[in-house]
Length: 431
Image (cartoon, one colour):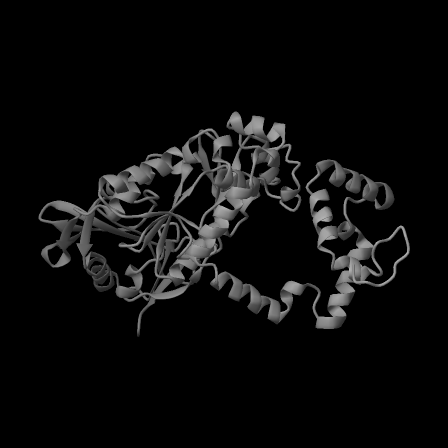
């Protein structure tokens, strides 16, 4: 092709010349679309080396590592500073327009031939355990969740339901529409390249709808939910995680956060009183996402005779270096109490004279802005915790701690789902 004399059967004078041939490149590209060619290639590698590709060979991996180490002083190219900076620049260029164009390009190139008959049959039955993927486009995809997401994004006709939206997801969308609240679905502008399921720009609130099957540890790992929460916090967005196992509670959480006609009460019009355990328990069970937890000090804020806010304390459950732990703080549903937390805490300080207080705020509810307003300081973030779920019930980690816990719970049909962890806040006396 370059004019240099060649000898048959080759039509190229050198490897360099061959690599510059567009005709040769097109033929290779076409061959890699042929599943028979790919399978034959894998079979040859298995027979010769016991693996399916060159990059699975230990000797080749060793050579690659040695080369990278000698050239750059690291073992993986992702550790090279220039590569890190390039990745960062790439992500910064992922504008909404770019992502939409990329999605359309993928849409136009996908067809039924990308899926095996087994995959199609499983999707049509609505089963999540996708198998039988033979197409080369999935050759580097290890997660079934990724396969399902690709199918859902680009071939929703194979899923069988409208956009594959779950019932909790649809309930949130319907409620926001009924309230006339503008929102964006599958938003990638806030924490790009990651996605927020439902984003309400006017309130700076996002909702993540976390189904148990696709958000279990096996698919998303331990830190997935926390990572998204912290990315949203950096953008001053409260990211609320709604879990499938929370059932009907999810829509109540949404209503409490976004309903426009929420009642607004000023704490200066209210009185603080000590309340009985039964009254505290009843109020917290009705108004706090995680229900009642044992406490020794129970304070109520009253508007005339109506209990509108509760704050409880006890000895610390997890960190004995502090004198008290603030256990629960919650207001009456669909009610905003201006200054209520400050008034309740001031009463506690005056009457109990604590030296130190610690408290935890779940990142499932978005980042917390109340504690620092009443004198606490932000101390850090806990590791994500988990629950075990099946189709009927949920069990906390404290109910299932045992030897071989994971193996036992999985054998019983449970999935491990991690939360977003907690923010830690501390108050200490100035004396």
